[in-house]
Image (cartoon, rainbow, N blue to C red; front, side, top):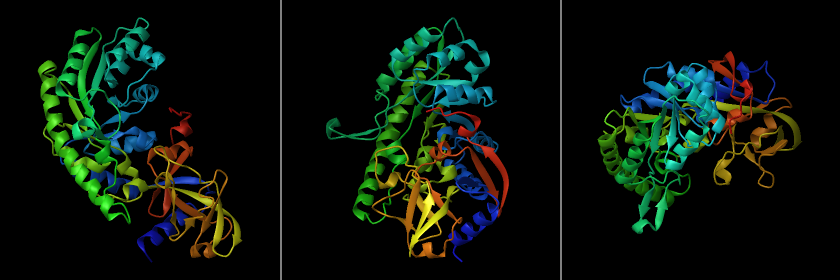
Length: 400
């Protein structure tokens, strides 16, 4: 029996009393992945990206382990909810225009001490001030650095379009702007190198493309390490008591941690290890989060139909954004239909061994987005469900 077949047997036994659709997290795999992130971070704390987990119980589980400290959130409403729930170090990774949220933040000492907001434009400071509504708490601010690799004099850009702050002078000027403005304090710098951390460098069947990605990433790492160090020096000249410099992502943990200027690493997807992280040479993890769909039809030889399953991930549309049939091994989509809103035909010889009501296990393309489809996660240890915990959705929250 292969390791994957053994996992399927465990998952089927553990959930035999549960009807699909359902979602699980294999805690043995989750904990092993957490240990691997800490090992790669090499002594620097790992800040957990909440958007890649979207389950309070599992955020708490990660933070209870040595080597993890703090959360990186994705909306202001989520940040405030997490802070009210007892998380005392929440870095909002994206700018916000949530005026009601800023009014609450500025009027509550506990929330203001726990939440740090992202800023890369003076206009964002104005929006926050306009939204205060009389709240006078000092707002903790993090400045975001653009990490993209510019080639050919800037004519070619590789990387996400995020912050307008790129040079040391620009980031230092923004730090001075914040420092001069009453009611704000710069406490950190963030730089997310998505073109390194979020792009696999071992694309199946594409050796030339894989080589090109590795060359690009090596160049990008060198350029960013030098520029990030210069940015941190420039900002510390303005803000000597800077608390943190955050960088990285699951795919670049060990590289980013090697930079002296970086004080902490961000990661979250590496806890679940969705399918987009199968194509990396820098690390390998164990799939921990899966979902099961029930077989409801057997249209013919080598074909079964499962209920639902059309759960595409965000990003540029393409086959790599689709979930994949994972267990039993050997199933694939019908190219004429793909994964559907209500039903999904699956092709392959394993279909002939599946009965009505059997479960087919899938892996989502990205990590936390799976939790937008399910109210609960069944936590598996060995071959038993040891707990069932709500996702954000299960607690009544869909923040985006």
